[in-house]
Image (cartoon, one colour):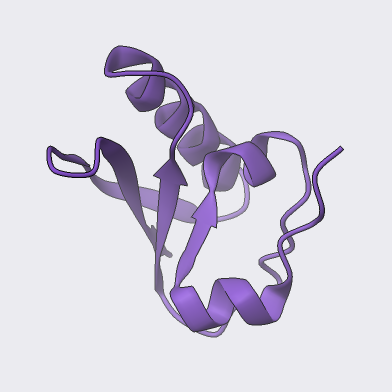
Length: 85
């Protein structure tokens, strides 16, 4: 089992991995900002988008709203940008 992403790390980077959200290893309660990026490294192409969207749906149950999804071609990482309502 991977280590929990600490709130300090999430605050500092303004990002959380989709893996951590889907495995319930991320605590966003102390997160002070309105925007956060869900980062998906796992899989390729469509798999990364699917994982990012699944994590976004989990956060929607906690009052977050999906703003956009982007794949950065140079890094092959998918980011789902979320806004706290």
